[in-house]
Image (tube, rainbow, N blue to C red; front, top):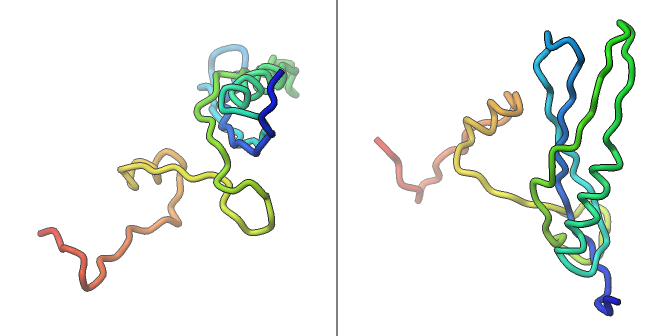
Length: 123
């Protein structure tokens, strides 16, 4: 039995959606979920279980089977704060290529940061 108190953890679950017939490329999605657990390992196990429970199939209007499959857990981290009040950051991750990030998620509203007066300017 685990005597550690449970604290909030954030997990990213990745899924694929496919339509039978092979004419449509799979679509991928990620769910960011909150899990209360005593450790990262416990949170990861709960995230895996949650992902497998969400796997499902159904028939669309064209009588094709649409399948939502769990691919895996992309990340699990302790939440940045132990209490989840309004207007707080739950999860943070970093990346090196804003252009690729924008392209991956079709985020045309993101703009490049501007250099401040003390920032080096590349030529």
